[in-house]
Length: 328
Image (cartoon, rainbow, N blue to C red; front, side, top):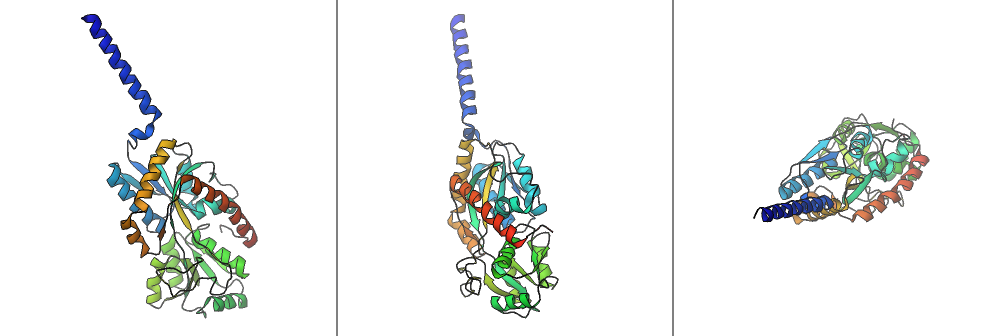
């Protein structure tokens, strides 16, 4: 009898060891096991922050683990991205990145403390967000052509505000400078709200900003909206011409946003994250929530997102070189 008990005990220990080993081999089966930190490398209240919080709320409800948004703003997104790159690759730290942090910064900052390709495992794109070209009412321009004429008459006298150096609001204007051969002066601010307020106050004369935050100032008569940055018109403003239609042939700037994890995150966890993020982003509730804000929610495979990042880096290297864009 004692011998049988010893055998049974050994069998139970063996079964337990097999379970632990299997669990270690397939970490996604026990994921997530604690709250998830979602790093947003820009200030609260901007488009990236709003989208991240909406996705985080849905993940919390679905998985039963809190998704905590951690705003680590500063240095064109570098601070938050560096924190994410150094985090444990276990799926409990995620990052929302965009065209600035993962395509532009490698050319804009000569000593970048992270590699946008080597240090991250892309999960999925989540959105694109075209920008409106807004000008202060004091600017003698009601069309893009008239704005370009003013800029050429007074080189360097028009200031353009941006939410940060290297971000979409900055690079949209740098692309305009490059393609239209004009000289305008970059004035970076700490966040989209601060930059837009500067244009409303007349401290800066123009800005590329999202339609949601800029349009109310157009209705009040303090700003004019001249064009949309994307290659096609926005469903939210179908009468608004694109910059290309309005006089700068070939102009097309459509910023993208996506979710990433630190490099080395196990493939089963990436797969589970991808499935969950795609489910949330493609839901009718999310699309109806964000379409009125000018946001086009989209998804991609991890491989396609990685390929996009790799293809965008040399494109922006050329634009930064041609325009002399800087972080000053």
